[in-house]
Image (cartoon, rainbow, N blue to C red; front, side, top):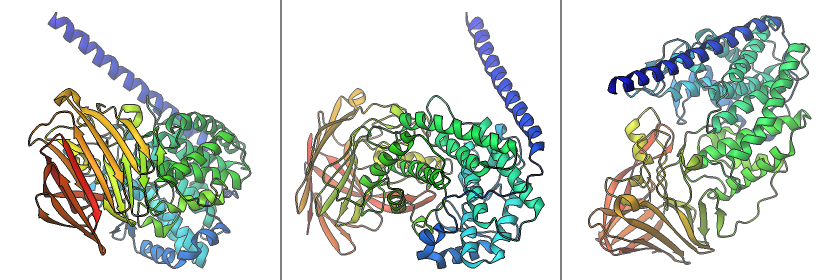
Length: 613
């Protein structure tokens, strides 16, 4: 029987290997087939005349207030000084190595994209560092600088970077060809940059031919490697967006083959986008991945894509516009001080293009999308929000008054219960007082760049909620982007000054049902945390504080909180207070030392009062 089981297991493994090999052979055949078709385009030397998000006219609208910043940034790029994913700068020598992680000093060797292992705990690197540079965000900044100054040096830098990148990244054979999302974002930025510099005298006929060929081959790759699995996410949305931008680029081309490609991509992407947005966007307008940052990225991708369709008088399904409106409305409801997102769920700083260089220095600032949506008539002029704000399907609630502003997570976890970019943050809260961030979500840190940090900042212990020692509210140890849901959170009451909810994350392990009730008054907040069963010295309530907050423990039940002249007192009944170290990450790849208040529950009911001093 054992031998039989082993034989069956071996047969299953062999069958899986056979299927994988078949799929790889098919992909390589398709790539070769499309490369042969490429012979039809090798002499096409015209840049498109179609319009994209930035053009000669819109540069004045979007860049007028920060022209000096664009020129300053572009001059740094001329000196091979590039922004990294965290918003800092990387100083590179004379020649850029487009396959090198400059943060971890790791070089990715060239091989077929199917042979890479992107998540390897034995190797100290984060492939996102390489991808970020190869997304070509900086090309758009250089192109904007050219529009402002007519300085051909900026165009020559674009040409040099694109062609050295092409030399170092043969089609299908580098780490920059492993994920279609990266290919899609790269081609969008390449198209946007070229549309701004197409009248430059720095291009010769051969360069134009090669650049058109490069755009074409990016489309071939995305078309043959669509990231559509059992559960799709922002990756597949980016693939569809990339195909639309390529379709717009080649629309009206003098080459019949390019025109056919344009029609093919646009028709397919429109049909798929309608379905995907119905699937990925909840009824309340929020993305089902359970991350405010990724919702911002998705909103940007859809807004900018609809924007270029309208600029080129390309009709598209009305359903896309209706969904885009709901998405931007959901984003607006969560902006703190009408600018910043709360760091609920993962934060990887992703953008489609850099729409606003100034806001890009703060990766939590999404106010520029509100401005774009208003210009596209998707939003009315800002209306005052009224408490409570409900994104009920997504499980995000906001209760506020003139002094306090609280955002609470209480609902199903991301990807319909599979996890995705969700954290163990059920019944966790974010608190702002008079516009100052006081209690925060810890952010993300890294993905594969630091596995321990990734797990730590995703864990229950790093969120402002109930934590049972050594136990998670949902199982996060099954994968970097996976969870097993146990919390099954429920909202019990929400009104203009009250929130109450519960979860069952510790019911199976400890027989505990957890209820949290928050009540807002003009000069204080009362938080009531209740557990159905007390485990002495094992049950804690955490509050994670912003790194600019100063905490001073007065005694076992009182802590003074200070920030920028603001003074607040935290007092508790039913427990004892300790102040511990805590990492937080406001930007991917960047961490800061902060603190958390850990309250040991000594009763089944804990009362926390936060009052102004």
